[in-house]
Amino acid sequence: MSVSANKKAMLRTVLLLAWPTVVELALQTLVQYVDTAMVGHIGASASAAVGLTTTTMWLISAPFSAMGTGVLSTIAKAVGAKDTERVRSAAGQAVLLCLIVGISITAVALGAAPFLPGWLGADAQIRSEAFLYFFVINIPLLLRGMTIILGAALRAAGDTKTPLLVNATVNLVNIVFNYLLIGSPVTVLGLYIPRAGLGVLGAAIATALSFAVGGVLMLHALYRHQLLSPRGKPQLDKPVMRDCVSVGLPVMATRLFVFSGQVVFTSLVSRLGTLALAAHSIALTAEQAFYVPGFGIQTAASALSGQSIGAQNEKALDHVTVLTTTIASAAMGLMAVFLFFWPEAVMRIFTQDPAVIAMGTVILRIVAVSEPLYAVAIILEGVFNGAGDTKIPFLFSTGCMWGIRILFTYICTVHFGLGLAAVWGCMVADNCVRCLLLLIRVLRGRWKRRYFGEE
Image (tube, one colour):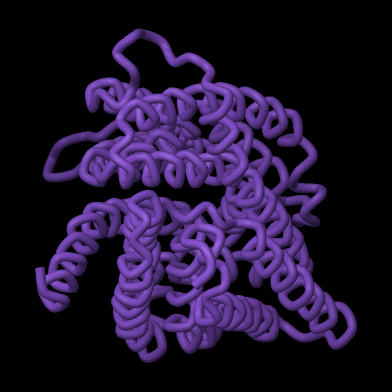
């Protein structure tokens, strides 16, 4: 096959792997938009109560996504090496990891729930609703973990459509129950709809139900896909489990440090007042739609980089890196143009509060400038994760979060009395520096020597 044909085949493979994940993430983002919009129409206090724990949920989900990365890398390499038995064993370890991590994290989350709003410095008026929301959505956390880890196993094996279908169902459940539980009863076209009017609690119940449905469906999909060994229930395979965990632990450390930084970041924002916290929370949700192409393509980058190393094909690894980075940065760059010129329209999707819209418009325009660079960071992180090279990226992410975002946010807010725009400027600086560090490491190329030897 010619070089040109190889490149076309690789492009086709990237797009085939990426598009279901892009659609899946787009649907998830749509649901978050609906959640935020429904709660936002209750008022700024409700938005702040829900948004207060958003970054904490990222922190809680970190062990699941980290172990999912370890499973993905192990399965992708086994697929590249055509080792079917190892693929099945790794899928079994994925189920065991769901149980171990899920039970542990659920206990921690539910135990911390009563104290979290106070720790984050929330105004007294929103603490009760923030606690209730956080507690309820974490009840089915074990099943949420299954959705994440088992979804990663399926994607590593090249099946990105099944996670798409599962998450589409999850999103539909969430939207339907949001509508039925959040608002008050209404009459539509003469038909009386007995909605529960539970407000923030209704949003929490809807989210918890969707998490439960997702976990059950993803476990069923894994068995139906025949990724698991036909011998019965998953058995511990220490060497394969060690491989999964050795890749996952640095990713977990990265995400724990980064997301704990996000929690501290939110606590600093909360001290700016309920209005600033509402604008911050809504803008965080709003910008997620503009990350969808990057994280969708990251899935393809991770799976294909792992498969390239498993097949001992360095040229394929290089081509995957360049191709996925180019596509993602171009896609997110185009979307950033819209975010920069029409941020007010984006904010109006979620709230009609003029003060929240005005504040959110400024910070969305700030973050739009950094989108192409952030796309590069997303993809390169995916390449390293697929390869199982996670330790140095951990140092980059942790150093940038705490040494740039948190440190300078603290200086700006506490010592100089600056507002939300300065806070988001610090966030952009964190993303840009991390991108440059990852890019330098890729261009130097020495990280590949552990997989392909010295030239």
